[in-house]
Length: 71
Image 1 (spheres, rainbow, N blue to C red):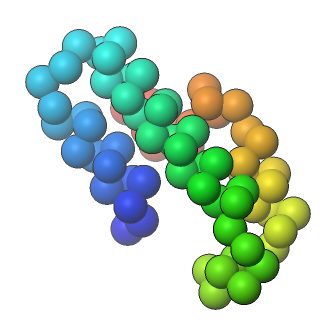
Image 2 (image 1 turned 45 degrees about the vertical axis):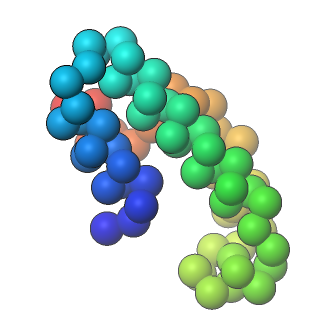
Image 3 (image 1 turned 90 degrees about the vertical axis):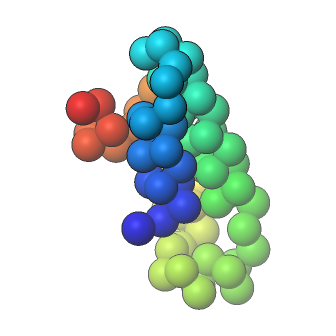
């Protein structure tokens, strides 16, 4: 389980309103995607992701979250 997924699970359990929970989840997703886009080629190789895949993921909009997050 990756850090972003664990963070999302933690946010879902917090006693916040749905709107605040969604905002926090999207903010976390944006930060992780930005970090992925800034990794150097050596680190991308370590995690098995190409530069093109990393940039494609980093450029996705905030609302474009994994389907299993919409539960």
